[in-house]
Length: 418
Image (cartoon, rainbow, N blue to C red; front, side, top):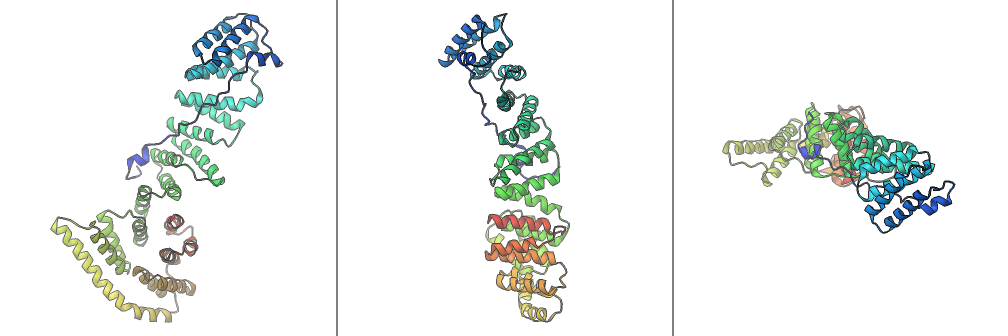
């Protein structure tokens, strides 16, 4: 099962149930007589007139009694039976008898008397009625019919997705809600958070690990909360088997404020030292000690943190002392790798202008061992400087088939939200 730290995030779903029942009052007996179809049976007309008067006074029980009198008339025309059903369904809805109303409305759709331009709305009403009575199979069928007649209805698209979800057809629930999200995006609108949550929860329940990761990535584009970032980056970090890429995920975790686990902090510091940027490790450990995160009443544990800091400090002092010589050698080198390493070091000491200059020179010179990593580091340096457009360009330069691609996408999302 995909690991998601907050179970509530993955499984508790805010279904959008606020879809109102679209119900139009039935044509009156007077209007009916003015149409091509007429109520000609006197007993029916009398009962319908009384029912209409009761409906206008919101006397629903009286209206229902008169409608039943009209129903009881034996010799009535098919059109009169249809008109009686129109009145009956309307009254039943006012009485919140949605299941009974839905059955009656299905008869009106099959009667042949419902005007063509009302079929889509009637299908939509039926979908809503069945949804409210928790008959999700029928709600799904009628919502899909409504969409066939009138595509791109956002509320019916939502209902289709919700019905699939409640019927535990999670792959179809995710696909259906994704269509609603894409429709909103095409219209330049921000998708609602609960739509995105339904996609996330559907993938989680289907144990679709890639789907969960992609859904979380989509959510943080629009709702970059700490909880979403924490779950997203935890998933991606655990997918990585490359130490330098893992270090990259830890950097982003720290950037968005979700690097809180002591074990993760210690691992990041060790990975930074292994990557040749001990200054980053020193700054991280000092920051987390000051914040009280790397703190323990256990003397053995606390001593371990102190040793980690001491080691990082020693290596950082040696590293900083070597920087001038490294810079001279990098400028003379025929390959750009030394300049990239220099830029990485400058970045670890928050010397962003020098980092950008060295990284750009190294990339341009060529001969870089991992040019995608170099572009990522360049993007981070620009991001730290507040130059978002240049950061985006650097992140976009990371190749799509690179092991750095997911990380660059996430940095891009953070850049757009920052």
